[in-house]
Structure formats: C-alpha cells, structure tokens
Image (cartoon, rainbow, N blue to C red; front, side, top):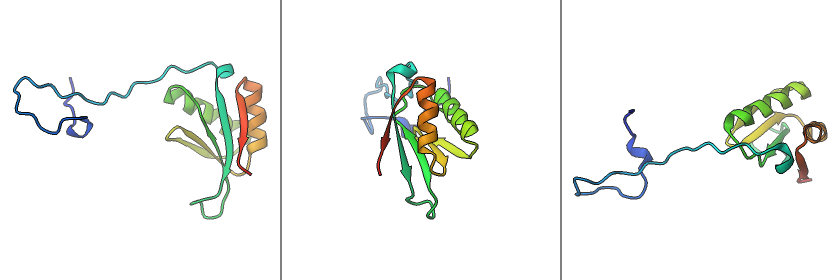
Length: 115
C-alpha cells in the first residue's frame, strides 16, 4: 500500500491516541450518466485569455476519462484546439452553435448560457 500524504488528511490535525487512524480523502469516480440524462451548459468566455474567445462546456456528470473523450470528440469535429480541466471542456474560438448541434446529435440536452 502506498504511503498516505499528510495533505489528504481531513479533520484531525494531531492525536495522542496510539490506536487513532487518520481518514483520508478518497477521489471516487462518478458513474457516467447516459447522454439523455445530462444537461450541459455551453457558454462563451473572453476573460483572462488575452481578448481571445473560448467556448466552455460545463455540467458533465461522469468520469474524467469520459469527459476527456467527449472533449476530444468536440475538438475533432470543430477542427480546433482546446483543453479539458477542472470538469470543464474549453474549446478555442466561438463555436457555441456548432457544439450545440454536435451535442444535440449525440443525445445530450444542452442550453446556451450567457450573451
């Protein structure tokens, strides 16, 4: 078993009890919901990007591998670059309408967010 990091301890900082067991944060993967059960929000963002636009897809419920696969599919079909991090899919450029069409075709429920 790998050594547990002190950073992942939750609750108790120190205990004098010799039989005390620290509890650690466990990163559990969520089961990926079916596309028909998910509602994804599509928005455009320009903040902290040097004036360049990016399209952000958020609200995905599932494992990080499935999120990365969805991000790769969107980047390929849009023909642009992007990134998947912190539960968001970031696509370069203003591609909201095209991404909405792609996700609707895949069976996801989508909503455009913002102006």
